[in-house]
Length: 402
Image 1 (spheres, rainbow, N blue to C red):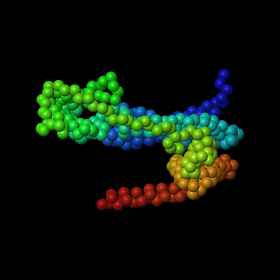
Image 2 (image 1 turned 90 degrees about the horizontal axis):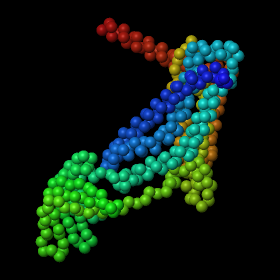
Image 3 (image 1 turned 90 degrees about the vertical axis):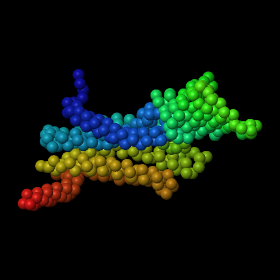
Image 4 (image 1 turned 180 degrees about the vertical axis):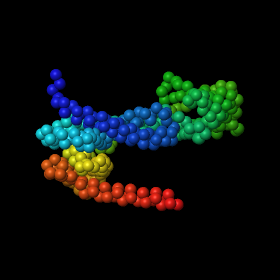
């Protein structure tokens, strides 16, 4: 037997599908925008294309943390907007269901998504961010097997230079090869070859460049003239450059979990700048999660248009308010990290103002007869729409006369 009342199941369905669609769409848009820059970065560094997908996978938690509040807001707003425009909300109110009763399901979603967002920003995202920065480091250092750029001189270590005219079969077959290596005693070896390929060895720090049909020139202070050798096949050992180990996690505050930020922020042994950054980032993450509990109040207030109106102004305002609140939090975090304002005040005062606005809007729509928190904006938007439509009709008439 299903213990959840039918009305709650109905509202849950109305909220879930728009919320899920908005969350997926927002995350995909952010991923696509980042994908183009990552492809450009990886191509510039000469790395394999597969690393792009690994880097994007490590950015998904960050994008989810941004998309979850938007999905929650639009899911609730569109659900109650549908109830309001179809007069179902009036019927529910008429049979004695208050707004407080109808808020059960929205707050169930808000509580569940707030816990999920806390897990993401507090514990998952720091590790994913560290893995992302690790991939960037390895790509730049060559640890990911960055390919040698065709037509350019590439330094392999401090004493070897390589240039390749053409590359085929994903770098397995090389053509038009020039390579030059120098020793500490002043000797140098230069070689050109028609073809070549890289081969692995038992030594992980050395690879073999097998050259085919080429000329080798050996120069030394001991030789009066350079020695020239023509060969059909020649194996040239190439020592790989030493790659530094990537730093440990915690090089930036975004790589620390919430408990770690709390510890660092109160550790007197840490520099003041580090403590301020940690405290500001800690409060930023907590505020972003806590603000989700005000979203249902604001969403319902913005969802209900004036009577005999189908205005979508509330949908537009909901996105503007969420983005504005997020940007204010980012600015407040920067102020707190610089020490201009105490991080506690910089981030929690805007949250309290945002919460007060949400409570006022909900109280107006739920407890004030005929209350409409954005009624003035709705009237301005309606008049502006009428003037625009009148201008368009006038313009069309003039065009018909001409």
